[in-house]
Length: 296
Ligand SMILES: Cc1cc2nc3c(=O)[nH]c(=O)nc-3n(C[C@H](O)[C@H](O)[C@H](O)COP(=O)(O)OP(=O)(O)OC[C@H]3O[C@@H](n4cnc5c(N)ncnc54)[C@H](O)[C@@H]3O)c2cc1C
Image (cartoon, rainbow, N blue to C red; front, side, top):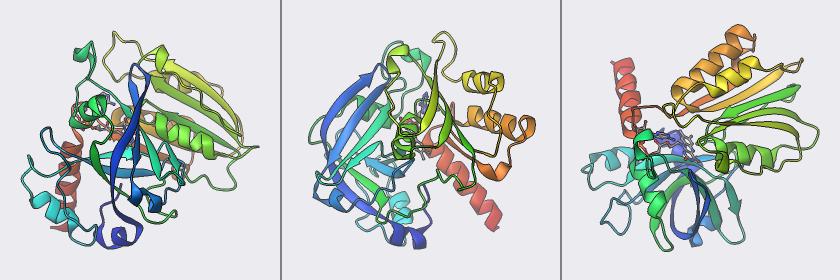
């Protein structure tokens, strides 16, 4: 999600919250329900609404971060020692219950269970695997529904939708399925580590969902999404595509759609949700150094 300070102060704010309950969804995913008074004002826009989640380090009782999400919070947060400042990671709102002031977030548990060698763990996956009622977090989330952290915006003239992603995009795809109205045609591909990770994704839309179970003998990222979409016979008419997941897989699929299928590049919304071998800190540092060299 964006961290541009000026616009962010209007669209986003900090919400203190705590874990209400957890629910294991399958071998690779856990649903964590966050609650707390402040979440009454959490203005989720649905679909793939994302936000920044701040987590405590092991041994801390609450995440450490600046008190205001106003101009300057990011620099203040970065100025704190890395071992003290809260761990910041991007996640998606899977569902929101406004009356109960609850927000559900589904976490992929990469590297936290056997065989651990098949994927690297990270602080957020580790935190989620051990989360329990009362654990404190902070969300930097939407203060208004019309915010920039909703990426799924099909134009009214799209004839059909192509949606594809891995397990990190599964919560967003679930949110999109919930949001799509009747009469919309969607072809959906979802890649998950295990057959038991397959979920029921109800939708009013005419959605044809293809589940792809990753071959566990292969490295955690492979090309099942690309292979499946490449082999598919796609509908005619004007498409809108939404793709998210591992950065390399997303790029390859986008290239296929634009170069080989002739999709208008402006009609392909794509997002690398994570990158093999890089933590979210690494990706943020890379983005910041790119911005610094653009400025110089
Ligand atoms: C807009 C947005 C929305 C997102 N929504 C969700 C969501 O709802 N649910 C969700 O689970 N994830 C989501 N993600 C992805 C999540 O932010 C990353 O997976 C993140 O790296 C997890 O943090 P970590 O601390 O567990 O791992 P990090 O410390 O960031 O990374 C540690 C290591 O783990 C590897 N890694 C990271 N993720 C995975 C993975 N899934 N499988 C295998 N290896 C991995 C990295 O390459 C690195 O080597 C979203 C990302 C974005 C940008």
